[in-house]
Structures are given as structure tokens and as C-alpha cells.
Image (cartoon, rainbow, N blue to C red; front, top):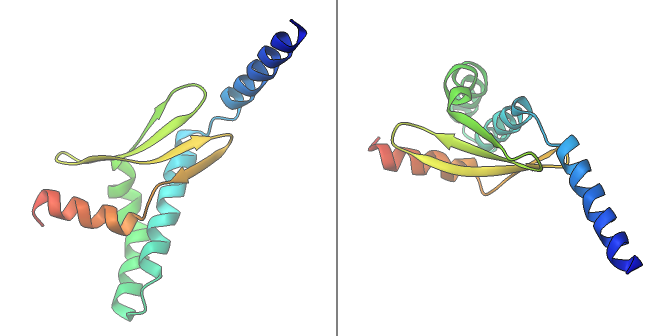
Length: 117
């Protein structure tokens, strides 16, 4: 009987900590911006380097930033990239961290393919 109560208390404690430390929307957006900037900065081509600086600055600030949506589920949150023709879950927030799935370079290629660019 005591074992059940201990297990329930531990589960309740973990859920309370998860709810308190669920990352904010800005944390999700900052993580996506950093990942996108580093995705383009990995290229060796100088033109791509200039493009990465441009993308991580103006384009991300005004364009990509508006496409990032966060769904908050109290104990965790989901990061989505949404356009008029495309929607994909790209990450998850849990215990003050944002974990992104896959590469954003693949995501950009998928968006271009879906929109016909």
C-alpha cells in the first residue's frame, strides 16, 4: 500500500515540475532561429554564408518567426512550422528545453517542394 502512495507522489511531483518548467513560446522561436542560422552557416560556399547572415537576420526575424507556432499542453509543448500550404511538427519542449526533430535544411526543402518553388 505504501509503495502505491510513493509512486503516486513521485508521479505528481514530476508532473508539477514539468508544468512549471514548460518552455515559453519565445524559447521555441529562439531555438528554431539558432538552428536555422547554423544550418545555413555549415555550408562552405561564401554566397551561402552571406545568405545565412541575411536569413538569420532579417528574413528569420520577419518571415520565419511568424511561421513558428507553439502548442502548449501544460506539461510539454510542441513546435510547428506552418505555412498556407504546409504544416509540420519540428520539435518538443519539455523541462525548460526545446528539442528539434531532424534538420531544418530538410524542412526548407520540403516547404519548397510542397509550394512548388
